[in-house]
Image 1 (tube, rainbow, N blue to C red):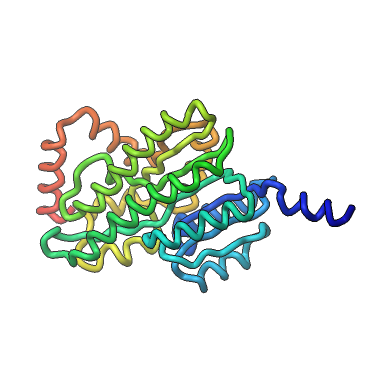
Image 2 (cartoon, helix red, strand yellow):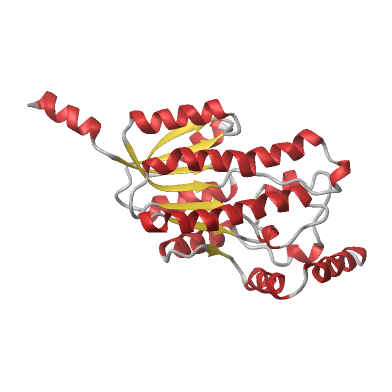
Length: 270
């Protein structure tokens, strides 16, 4: 009898939350906030390249954690992650794609491989992982994709990053419509500047408009709103009045006018 019980316990569906980019910033904050309030979750699956930081995070969580120290732009690593999902017979309750980076500065002056790396991580890896994980979801599962307010408008000196985030926003909104009938809901997270290590990489070869820094918000605030918007089945989560205003302006004014205004602000050091 005990042998039979052990067999069925092993085959019981495990309720999982999978977070990429979990070692720092917004991904880390998602793990911390959900650890406090989410019940009925068997394990958090945390993916990032930095194993040491993942272990430090796991040590702070009450939930059991499984660590995947990997580069998700490597499709073989994503295949291994999918194999683990199959082996453990999981139900993926939430997929949170936070892995990504940006580089500021004139496009022609940037390292080509770094620019292409943004596309591979911000777009290709996000798309492939989402495609691999959807079969493990059920009605009520949710997908949260890290886009950006940079998706609202082309961004000179941030050209590739803004383009990748426009892709994430468009892809996520279309995917949400496709999955709605299955009861799986997709939310694009579109913050402005967030107080995370993001700018340590982004500003190595350039800088954003100074005015953007006045709109900076905390990762805690972005995550709390994103979780609420996801629960309300909203397709977008935009944190803060400045970014909500920016979204409205990007819809009602020609982009040429907004780009000219941004150019003038840059010339005046704003």
